[in-house]
Amino acid sequence: MTSNDAPAPESPPVNGPAGRDQAPQFVLPLVLHLEKTDPPARTDALETAARAVLTILSDERSLGDGVWAQAMRDWQDARIRKVVRRARGAEWRKAAALDGITVTGGSAEVRVYPPIPLDGWPKELAKLQVSGTDLDDPEPPAAPDPQGPVLWLNPELEMSAGKTMAQAGHAAQLAWWELSETERTAWQESGFPLSVATASSDHWRDLITSGLPVVRDAGFTEIAPGPTVAAEGGSRLCPLQRARRP
Image 1 (cartoon, rainbow, N blue to C red):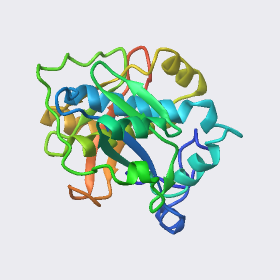
Image 2: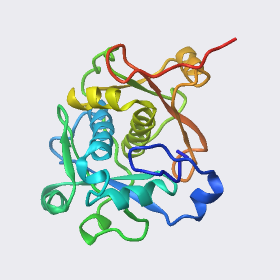
Image 3: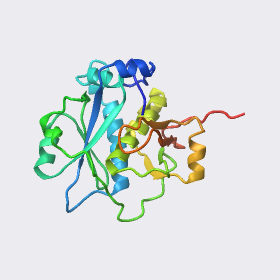
Image 4: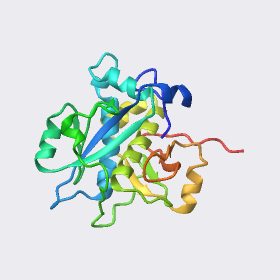
């Protein structure tokens, strides 16, 4: 995702790539609770990660003069980086004790933290694994609920669960930036319902030319640069406008 220089944490970045790359670089850490004997379902982990990003974006501590607000602004002044790591047992308990927010899905727990410098990871998080995280859906996921937004994955890509969780978080953030305050409040008060699903090839081609928010990965890890996730608005929550076509 290529985003930069936000005037406030709840607003989209406004400056170009040069300013984004010259600014100090920060990262939003997310930690997935992953026990060997009871891993979460993949789709639930993706949706929970997306909701975790929305939760910290909308938290009062991230806004105005809140204790996380400067960190959120600094993060959005540079490239919008997210890194997902995993923890179990004592590692998870130590990670959960750090300042942050734990968001729970059907089977997944994801803790999100205020942004930190790229080289400033706290020791409790720095030692956690970042690569090789993969998950399965033991049963076919439910069909996306059209009343809320759907984060559609690029059907041509294969990404680890951790990478895909970060990309889903990017898409949710792009959707959030598109909304009015009234629309944000309605979505937040409903608990940020959303769905994550893989698009068909035809649907994906339509999405990336629709004017809807599309995450375009910079290609630093796992995949080549290009589009990864598209956000499509819901009929009741998170309405997103398509571009008018001739």
